Amino acid sequence: MPQVEIYTTAFCPYCSRAKLLLGRKEVSFTEYDAPNGSAERDDAIRRSGGRTTVPQIFIDGQSIGGCDDLMALDRAGKLDALLKAG
Image (tube, rainbow, N blue to C red; front, top):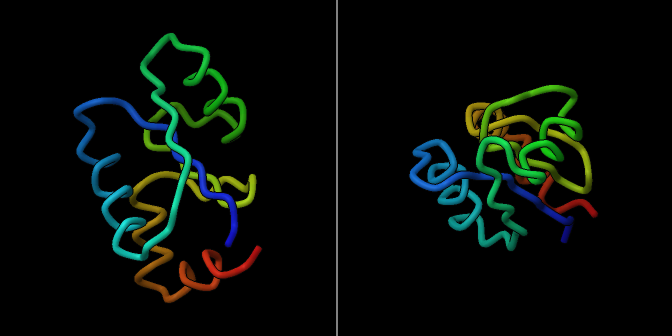
């Protein structure tokens, strides 16, 4: 199973949607609380190549983007393959 990481903030509906999808797929993930101005948010921005929004999702260290990107991968039938690799 690949390592999945997600940077989130409290009360973020996009973060909740992304975590819900990962949960439905029974994927364990590491969640980082990344409010504005935190070291975690700075880390997410650096790792994602400058993206400043949350969530930021990484699979095996590779940035896949945010919630919309995660959902698009799922709709395209590509997410399951990424989640089974590793």
